[in-house]
Image (cartoon, rainbow, N blue to C red):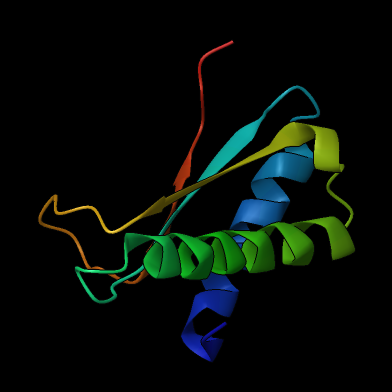
Length: 89
């Protein structure tokens, strides 16, 4: 996980700790060879699980975190990333 992500992750931890009913979805993306989408999907899963592990080590319960590995997805954003979403209850 890049060190530049730490401030954003710390802010996310604070937000989740401030509202015990808040849930989060982590959508992992990864670039990779177009002939091997499964490789990109595995990398995107690893990336999202790394964020989940950080949240859990910071005191956020795993039952409040959903992880999705989306692999290669062309939507105009950076190819290698984890998006954080807050689903409506």
